[in-house]
Image (cartoon, rainbow, N blue to C red; front, top):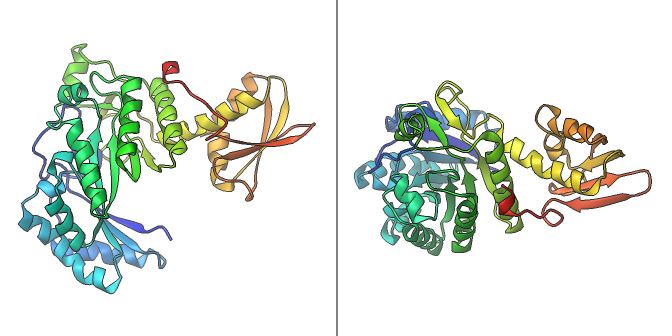
Length: 349
């Protein structure tokens, strides 16, 4: 049973750098103040009351958890220890930087219930990292992933295609490198230009050209497809829309409140385009969990097929896997997979 995440945002806390793209307070909608023990316990209790028996995972997002003074790390985790022992809370998740991880820290965190560590890798290209003011190298990211895996803790890698100096080929290479290093899951956050950041200054001065929404979706489609082929979950695509992140705070870049669905929908649309010639009338069967993806955001996939003269009816079928479509024509029905029956070249982006 998937756990319910109890989130705490500690924006910028512990961060030794301010990267050119970063404004964590805008992204999270909070000022990054560290929660007290009472606030932690109160929120856990509130989430538990609505969890309907599902397990709880406490997550500290934003900031650099492992760069906080050890005393503060302990103060944040200590209130959870009785709840972990009692099984009220199943596990803890933290976010940090690749250059703020070593075996000693991982062991200490593991002993206090941390079962997942997310790393802000962003890119595996040293020139891109330097141009973005990250302050760490690609080698440190690889070392951090392997260090966490060695200690039996789940590790996720956050990637940011479209940073200064990045290319689609470099973004794909970054994804492949973190997967090869042992990342258990990925988040893909295409770069956006937030007001008040150094990237906003560069954008205004004509020194930086961000990914457009269309190009970003095309690139993320390829990245998601490659991760699926490697059987690595991508748990989020695009920054989450909330009170702090909206069209007013974003100057440019690849952002949409339903970006993840837009990207997934492209895969299903491409599959239909590949196997259904223009001018046909078909029924497309999909797993019920993928109905909205197959139809597309605001029925975008249905309209895309209509432009080709293809009439599509979509119905649910529990016998299909999430990545499969059964395409029914007048003559026959065939099952296709977006994993094995689609092929992309990064040069197309």
